[in-house]
Image (cartoon, rainbow, N blue to C red; front, top):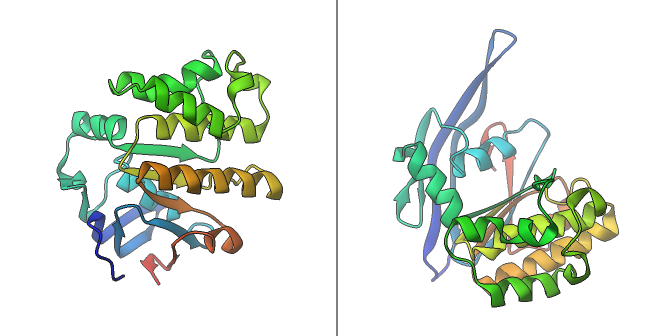
Length: 224
């Protein structure tokens, strides 16, 4: 990748092995990856190729066996649990396939949750997010009262409310029909561009991957 922008994420020779049924499974075998500021990157690969594992390692939700992950000048692989939690709270946005909203909180409070605990709540930005995501009429509802597409919009709004440096999205449209998936991804692309944050999105859809700035493929534990 050739770019004049700063590199916000650098993954170098990352490895991860699991044991399954008593056998060693080399999920990642030396992954190298760089993402520039503001770049939107799609990551595809066969089922079980390690896509989600790679995102979890970048987010500090799991530990690599070897290799390095540098994010915005911070070595993720050298951080303790408290440092990783602070990084996820302040600098990373996380969006998953299964929404992970807090069922006891209203849409309004779910949207504000991360930015409030990070001490970076911006009422004006949250109001703009709410309008852009089409959620203004649903603020007093609870997650169970929303459609799948609406719940994913809340999850995206919550992640972007903190204005993260990097948004990690793991199959964010996997539970949505094609039309809703297109709509949600288009909104995500626009909002990511507006905030200036980078995006790394795992997707099984080559069609959706083609709408981002760059498409990389994980195969046999390596970036092809």
